[in-house]
Length: 139
Image (cartoon, rainbow, N blue to C red; front, side, top):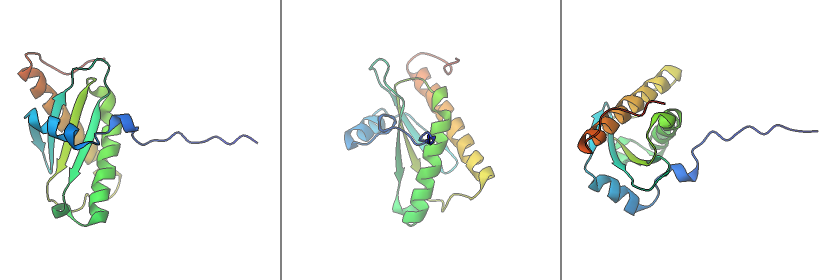
């Protein structure tokens, strides 16, 4: 009997920022935009073929552990859905401002995905303008 195993939907370890030095490098690049309750910081890495990575910062002011983890799950899923639209080698840190728990349900998940998509697009455009380029990757 062959049992089909579902494919894991989470982010691979290579797609996450984990070390404090990586977070500091993104903050030091001083490229940020805000979108609703989210603040996006970004940095373009120079290594060729490097994956786009996500780091999350959700402080205790946002809520208890359940609320903070709910935000992180929603943001990781939104990043998973939009990361193919991002240029390679971007390190991204998303900070959740104190705003309470994310809304529940599929429409709320789509709104968070749209916040992620809009914020990241604005950040990437800002980073490219700072580097003397324009626009997002179009493939």
